[in-house]
Length: 350
Image (cartoon, rainbow, N blue to C red):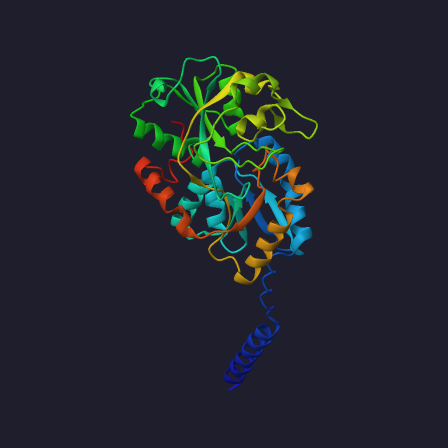
């Protein structure tokens, strides 16, 4: 009888301990709100134009976004286009990224990344890629580039590689040695110092500050011959030629190394239209925060502070920003697939 009583007592004690333990179990902590100090919004900047300049200014831009939105941002510059795509897809609910057209299409198809806004430069939602060569070279047409060595920023760059590749293919041109330079500025420098025969970089049209003229596709793509020797960086930091011609293509980002870059390098040809680069959102980013972020970025773009960072020629050179939809990138997808570019190959050296 005593053993049975003891067994009953022990059983009751076990039940009591289990009940007590369940009652004191700590609740799971609530997830931190996105955009707070405990869970900042990750903002990724692809390494494109002048990578060192982008790295040096990324935190400043993130703080500007914070000031404009009241949210907290954490900036980073991934090592490649593929790394940027992988990072936004790996953290889909709290990450945004500045993605050019090609990288956006890959990220969208890979994990559902969505476009929010895109750059609008001088009121244009598109830009072009320029084929650049030494000014005193004998190259006059794309066909002349057959077998010539080619410098480009990254295989993942829409203007630096994707559209130029399609243009060369269409022209029946097979280049010789292909050199990945690591950036648009570096590509300009590679042409200027003779490391490659030609390069491909972004092209933003020239401006005419003292007239009402506006550049249109089909107008001159290089500085008029009679203005070449006058080209120099002016007091405003613009690469000016004469009184009414401002160079806005990638050459303007290389003046620290070559103040006489226009005298050294000319534009040979352009590609077809390319959609401007985007600010895109991870597929699970909260809808109620998207508009706040976009409004904050739009309010920052075009300010004096922005022209020292994000809007600078060495960063992404945004003048304005406007909403954009996925349908704007249909042609990019077609060319991408024709060229066989995937996330696995986007950063491979050609």
